[in-house]
Amino acid sequence: MTVEGDAGQRRQWFSQPGRKSKDVVALGDRGPVGWICFGPYRSEMPGLERVGEVYALYISPDLIGQGIGRTLLGEAHAQMKGQGFETSALWVLCDNQRARRFYEQAGYQADGAAQDDVYDGITLTELRYQHVL
Image 1 (cartoon, rainbow, N blue to C red):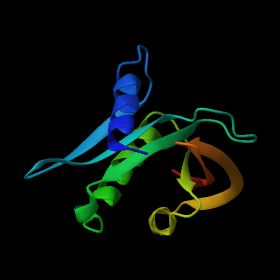
Image 2: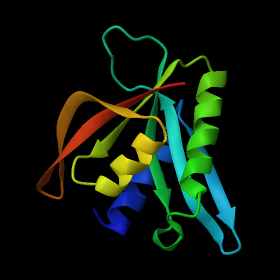
Image 3: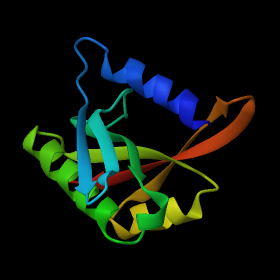
């Protein structure tokens, strides 16, 4: 992924009419330092109703480990619960051990689902994680 390509995708995403996702931005002394995007789960999960999804969570790399991600995730959980969601799901890259540890410490567990996505011609495997709200 490139910054330019991701920025273009985000601009398209933000401008979609009727978008049901929500965004929360963490601000620091230098402006935005983190962002989380969440909303209804984009597919179906057999046996579960009222599932929310964390679509994206990004923190400035030099600020990782400062609690910004935990704060944003906590706010997303509170808002999802307030909207009636019972479970939160998310997809994380299989090889991203740091992110997997972060989500596991936040109470998420891998549920065995996996999917492959292609980014710039490279196939990456993602694992689905779930957390009861």
